[in-house]
Amino acid sequence: MEDMAYSKNPYLPRVRMSAVLLVRRGWSVRQTARYIGVSPGTVSKWMRKASLLTDGRDGIPTLSSRPYTTPNRISPKVEKAVIKERKRTNRCGQVIHHVLTTKYGISVSLSTVHRVLDRNGLTKKYSPWKRRHVLLPRPDIVLPGDLLELDTIHQMIKLSKRMYVYTMIDLASRWAYAWASERINVWRSLKFIEKSKKESKFAFRAIQTDHGQEFSQHFTERVGIIHRHSRVRKPNDNGHVERFNRTLKEECLDGLPKSINIYNRTMETYLNHYNTKRPHMGINYLTPLEKIRELFPRS
Image (tube, helix red, strand yellow):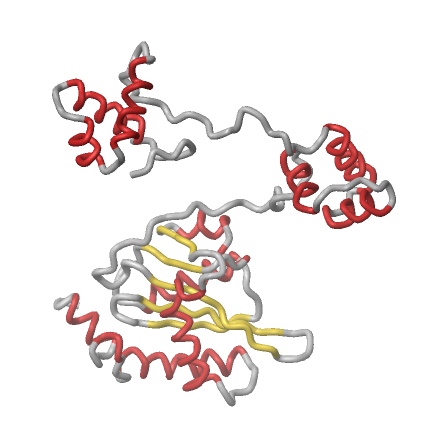
């Protein structure tokens, strides 16, 4: 454990004070340092800091890592020029940097321009209309319904027209479901959940999706069960449903006419085969239905 000045560990102040109390109760500095996992010099520094405290009940606080002086800090004149150019043209940092260096002869780096814009609140972090997702921990997967992964397959019909296939797979049993739709949005995502609940033999407790518009925060608030999102640009988080998408396309959808009715009729037959007759390597060559009966003997 290093005594990093900018550490955000909330327990570190109490750990420091615990080390000081051990020394005050008779432990040597070396023995305490070996016990805590720091150098003896660090413990001695904590002792000096503790002697200056009037009340140590909250521990030895973490001090700011900000330097006392910043000789290389950008001058106020240059900072004002960056801000003025941004407000005048509302252009990006690259354009502002180009204008300042070529037109006004101001020597400043591009990264400095971006920092100035950022600390003055002149950068657009994200759309103010987009509602952010709350990151939830991944649940333990023991029984069917503990976690299901959802995704959508995009299929081109014409040059500017698409159709979509909602897909779902249960991680415990590998039970799967799919449904074709002409559009994707929150309402159709909720409808897909309701249709899949009617087809399944178990209750849904948690689902996991990517950050697509059809699985937005509005979907989270209306779905009625735990909804967590995969990490951004981490497709492996939804690896099970991504693999099912490939299987569904290779064994069922490839070669079919691009028609929602044909897709849904064909997938109904294929999913019955997939869930009741097709052995799955991920569950020791059982079918999803056999796995469900193994986990739920009475079902």
